[in-house]
Image (cartoon, rainbow, N blue to C red; front, top):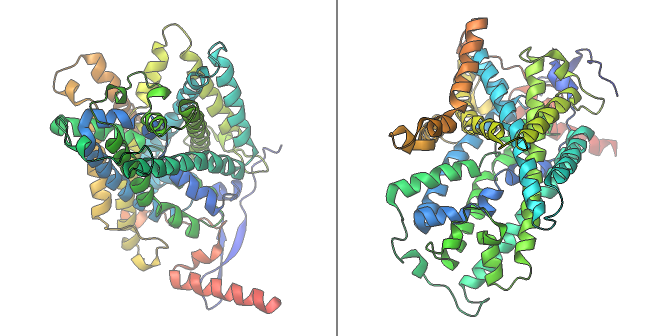
Length: 533
């Protein structure tokens, strides 16, 4: 297994249909990683990123808290925010498909200090998420084998996830493809069964709008109920940005990234809006089982609907599906945090040895370090009352939303700098919708979610520890940002100084500088292949 850094090569790339060429230097971070992920991998990463326990377990509580109308409105608003965020990420990731993704975009277009804080914030978030998913996997397995110590399952699953990630980027993509496919099939079956029950095809009696008008429905607890669900819905969509990290190892990013990004709207509509509507039609918000304070699989709204439809062993089936969700989140967390640490090392913002890769293009040192951190964070949950682990998780609570703020702000600066340097919007392989309104709306909504995490404590209705646990991630992020700036005295990036150097290890035709040139070069290649035949 080689750990030697490859020398930085030069490559001759096409610059236009006229056949002129220029010699360009490949950045090291694009030489080292292997572009092994295919279109189907990227699409499933985009789809699977938003499906997890937030939908399978927590969706019932949102209906109980805000009523069917309030829950739908909250998820729809978060869906709009995520749509704009993914549009912003898609524009940058298609033009600059690199492993550091939004951490690198923040460094290039906002400031080196902001990029430093973004990168470490994201690495920490997913390293701790790995630990959280290991704990969750032990609880899931107790449903079937209550006598087996949970740490055995956690250790086994961590080993499996490490092996998958150690093989190659394609192995990760393949694993995530099948994990996500199981979740997608479950949701589709749920919707088919649920709609059949609503229409009276199953169960013998069609559902009415009674659940939407009973008691305080459709909007329960007013604006405060919607706000509470707004926060839960935001957490449910954490991970959708993973496709931006995966773009750095996609085979044909200028084609596959836009296709993956454009699935966001449809998955929000299908997997959340329709699922919550089905649950609301079949189970009244007043049903105490929806609250499910212990997050029991037996009280998952999916389980309740399947049991109502007469599906045998519904709880056991849903437990298996949730296990795949847990493993999927752990798999993605290990992948994303490893690539972010690798990217930080390339920019001299982390120890250099984290940039070493294997011949398969896997940043092994970064993977080992991240696995160890996740493992020790998990062990902290087994020590004493688990207070240390609780604080570690609290520190990562806002990290996903902070990342989304960074994506929106980086994209706003990206487009400004792109035009300031004489480029045209038409030169972008993928153009985000409603710029500049889109990223600004997403930015405002993300800030609103961050501030509203524990609005009761902010209003003086909670103690200091409650306030600190909710907002701990924010001062940590600001500390990284300000601390780096004080040490390095790095200035914000001016539009005319922004670095638009593109990777040259994927379809080099895209370096031609315009969509028209790309299409012409692709047509020429196709004609050449036909002539050879």
